[in-house]
Length: 69
Image 1 (tube, rainbow, N blue to C red):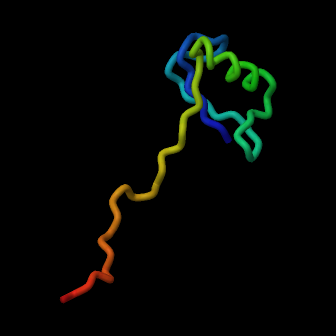
Image 2 (cartoon, rainbow, N blue to C red; image 1 turned 90 degrees about the vertical axis):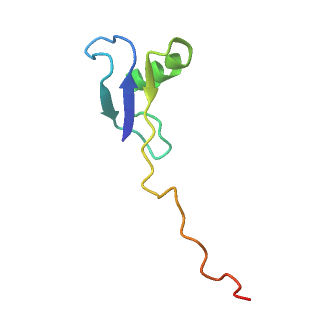
């Protein structure tokens, strides 16, 4: 699934809404309408792909193999 945020009024969608669209493994929408809409979004900014938030921690634990001299 691909998450798309609506940035400008589109028929049937309100601004600010995030929708989910079926996609293939490469992230290409299966629906022709959304493939075309995302292509035009590069120039008019009508919608954008929402990146999933990483669940990986930003902080790392210190390495425990430090030399103790």
